[in-house]
Length: 137
Length: 392
Ligand SMILES: [Zn+2]
Image 1 (cartoon, rainbow over the protein chains, first blue to last red):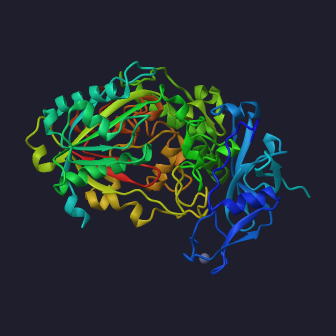
Image 2 (cartoon, rainbow over the protein chains, first blue to last red):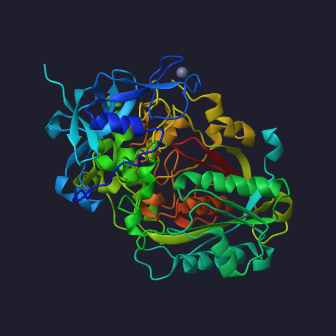
């Protein structure tokens, strides 16, 4: 972790598979083995049918921006050099919303409904953050 | 069932410290000033207080055990919730229920926030709430740089703007109206006039929220004393009754800073044309229809929250609030004045208890130049769906 000053996610038994998968370059999401619903955030039971049988399946990595913001204030010193940067909620093709940065996108192209795809950013030896960029073509 | 509690509890005393920025007093000292003022207002002694209801704990505020110890109280019932504005209503409701059922005699709701001293708690490295494994309490996601509560309000407003075509200049009507109220309140921290042009010139903080869409960061305390209606009749002030209540909503279609169905977090993205019955239960409990509400008081940490509460409680339809608040509708003398002491946006951030104190002043007829004519019924309500109606 040396040199990485930004906050890192807390990894617990419910979400560990997500972060392990991301570090392997795969976007994997929890999906109920009983009712087949995808859900987010990860948890111990299916919020749709309350089953305990939660599996993890590879997601398409495609989605659209459901909302976004650009941060201009340096609340957190480690992000100061990145200002302004974009954070969005992405409605994935699987139907759940995840939060991540939008990268490789001029600020004036950010909009609700923008098609995006996942990219993987290995920030430390043990942590990879999924981010999203506009989907071209 | 609910009607059984109608008018069974009353607010009998209010007190505030001074409000300001970088005040030298400790949190306990500010709380003590407000506590003494509330006792004096009610005509009660320190020994009459047997219960505490608190939701802004240490370090931003004070914990119940600190208050009891420091003020020499003998306490037999306590409610303490998260250090969040979202628990204003629950804190007051718990006090009202406790006195109505006989669990408590006089509850002191003790509220103090020293934001300027504890500044790095707000979105900075010491704001640990964002690290919650299932997501931050206002959709914070610190590893992606979304570290402050304002980010959640920004995400909600951005989508609202995309859905309904609302502009920042329209949103400006909210802080402009609240500043107009504040200028009638000498206690308000913000006294400079604010125009829509001033709002548009203020710097972007977290798009689409500008500086003037965000509440002020201040220090101050407010204490509200609650007792049974029966006991209230023997005290110094004319009682202000808790006429009706409804609780906070939670679930997958809820996000703290958005109306249901807006499509934030795991919300459905499908908004109902009108509020559900459970979103309007407070009016039935109070036996006071929405049309009889003469002023609305709400948690206005960010200006979009005012739009969202208006829609949530059906004062206007989904997508119509920004148009509805134009032309002074929520300002002094408007059709529905909102947060007449200036709210969190312009008076002080005492988590909304400054606005609850203002409701009591209005219902007693003590609001001076900002008095709502013949105020009889006022509503406290939030974007997350809880509410208390107070009446004289
Ligand atoms: Zn299921």
